[in-house]
Image 1: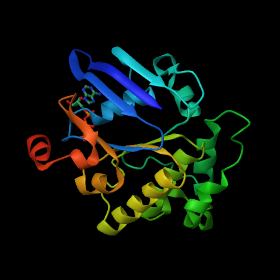
Image 2: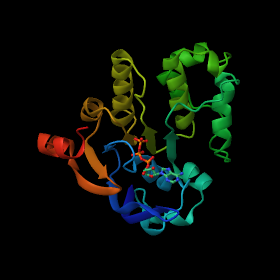
Image 3: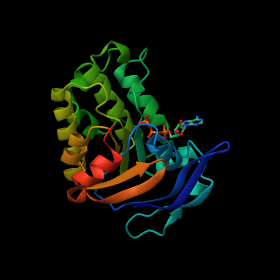
Image 4: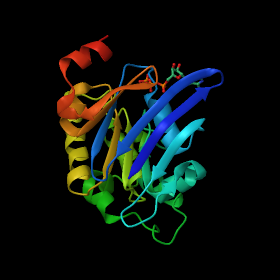
Length: 237
Ligand SMILES: Nc1ncnc2c1ncn2[C@@H]1O[C@H](COP(=O)(O)OP(=O)(O)OP(=O)(O)O)[C@@H](O)[C@H]1O
């Protein structure tokens, strides 16, 4: 579905991402791990088109379609093509109603296929339906998180990227989020890319991991291959 090869990125003179490779096969869930400041958000910003890539390749390919060079596509096109993004810190429009938050996200689609909020959104989040006239900012934190996720789902993405979805969550809410991502991945077949500090959470939901250290991928593979030696070397603080 998405393949990155030798991606390099600079902030001014600072070399941030060094020859990063990443492969997201359809229907899989991959966790990007790393201590703070190691380049996880920068990598996602490059995938979303929020930041330019200085060298390397990024290819998007769907079943029975030719590969597309993502680096030629502006940010809006990447969203329309099927990439949904839930940014760190639940960025919702707090003054707007739940429904308007969803309708605004829908506008980004700019096509006939996405004129109404898909039924699956309110099926997944029935509580959001019952509070759809309330202002986003007035919702409790777990419903704000649901709204942020629902906003990313209105265009029915094929790849969902989440930046620190469990940040600030209680263990109970973390469990709920894990169940939800499991459902999206297994029942709806969404490919998921997850940036996350909580190793226990990644272990629970992800099939694969990629470990970034100072902008380089120092380890990657199946989740079961992530051993204590690797964790102690690259993740222990
Ligand atoms: N706008 C910016 N200008 C210059 N350097 C930046 C900018 N944003 C991030 N950086 C630097 O890029 C490096 C990677 O940062 P990034 O935010 O991608 O890391 P991260 O792994 O996502 O960290 P965190 O888990 O804390 O979000 C850091 O050294 C950071 O200081």
